[in-house]
Image (cartoon, rainbow, N blue to C red; front, side):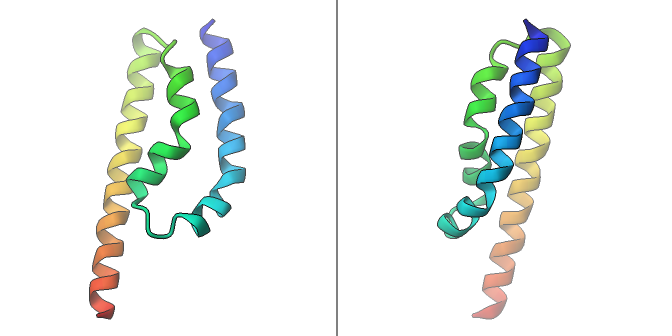
Length: 84
């Protein structure tokens, strides 16, 4: 079952990549964290079936991605603050 879930996650990631451009335009006022969470909803649902080390690896990846999103949000804040 874990192999099926991982394959489904890979398919969803491809679909997610196709949505990014439209989200980028539509969500320009949305934080990177909010955007990541929205795009990651399908993957999160599938990842609920992961166990053990696979679950830990997924959670570590998600934490890393959220930290990167927060860093981009801080960079964007500084950029816009510098323009004012």
